[in-house]
Every structure is written in C-alpha cells, then in structure tokens.
Image (cartoon, rainbow, N blue to C red; front, side, top):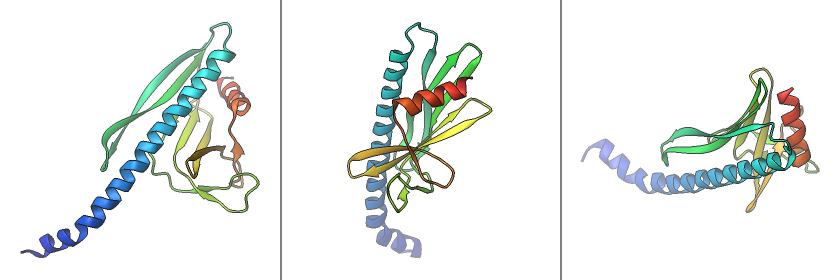
Length: 160
C-alpha cells in the first residue's frame, strides 16, 4: 500500500462523518432560507394592495463538495426604475453577531444581502436550537430583530 492509500483509509471515517454533518446543516439552511423568502413574499402581497411591485423569485446556484450543485431562492423586487435584490449566501458565512439582550455573540448560520446596486443591508441567521433568529447587521455587531416592520422599512429605503 502507498502512503496516500494508508492516509485516506485513516481519514475516511472522519471525512464521511463531517460531510454528512455539513450536508444536513446546508439542507437546513436551504429550507430556512426558502421559508424566509416565502414569508417575505406574503408580506409583500399584503402590503402591495395596488399591484405596483414586480416581485420575482430568483434561483441562486451554489457548488458544494457535500451537496453538489444546489440552488436557494432569492427575490428581485422592482418598483418603477428601482430594483432591490435579496440574495442568499451559501451556508459558510464567517462571523458572529450578538442578539439583542444577550451578552455574547453567536455563530452566523447563513445570510441574505439586500442590495439595490448602490446601498445594501445584511440579514443574518443564527440558530437557537431548532429555531431561527434573523437579525439585521448594525454597527457594533449587535443585531436588530427582523420582523415585518423592519423588512418593509428596508424595502422602502432601498427602493427609493
């Protein structure tokens, strides 16, 4: 046997276990991101009583060692000449954010960028057990809670 063959045999269990863990985390992120996009779509429909917004779901493709090629939905929201793109990241986002009322930072488990070509904002996901916490990035790293009101305010700000 070669040195490489021996090394790969010793690494195989660890690599397979880590790959399975990463695959599960990435599928969880994909599901969570799509649930959030669905919620945003619902809020936009309720708010747009006159049908002025043109909202399109956009598939963003990612290439991944554990999953192969996969896509996560984002949005493009157009009002007149202004377009806001809501773009998901792949799962591997480096960093941490502090939820309001907590003293420590939490690992980021996914991100959406809200971008109009000139200005942008970042929405981060952290896990709390099986629950997702969505936080807007603010200076100082203390997140601002994401809700319908903050979503609508961001949409208005970036479509102006």
